[in-house]
Length: 60
Image (cartoon, one colour):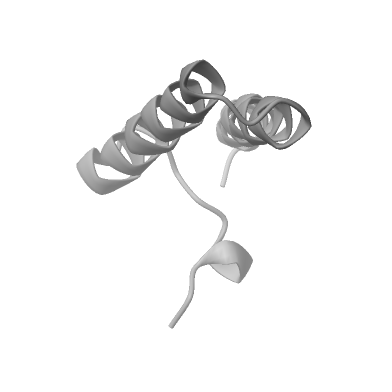
């Protein structure tokens, strides 16, 4: 995994974590929708090969 790929993956995870944290701090529909949307975008990117996920973070 290249340094650029690691940085992109790290950025996506940080964004996802912030959305989830926002929902946990203020559990309303707006924050829930934002967290779900971010999670779907991450999953779509992972499935399409748009981002590379480090092997140690892939469940077997």
